[in-house]
Amino acid sequence: MKQRRYDINSPAELLATLVVMFPAFASEFDDEDGEPATYHEVIRQLTPVITTYLRDTPTQVEAFCNLVNALVCAGGDKENAISTCLLEHASQVKVRNTIRPYLSSAAKQELR
Image (cartoon, rainbow, N blue to C red):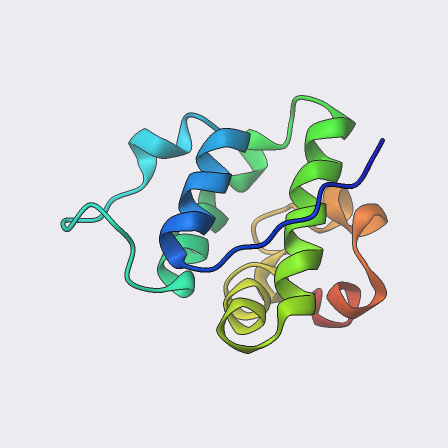
């Protein structure tokens, strides 16, 4: 599978990308203003439901992990959000074993 490059420049772009991957997330994302204020807000709301979205196909898991890897690689708020809100809680939300094979070495360092 060809790896897609993700160039996420705002929390709203991250949300839009996730909604394309997981259409049900559009109705589950809860924000009074309509647009997320932070990357943390988006990932924090995705984390509890991510296992339900990653049940379909390995291709979908790989695409999601490509996004995770891109956020880790980007550094700053993007890396902090994906690391602290998802990767550090991967075992708790029972997604660790599903995503681990597709993560970059930098992302695996944050995986718990």
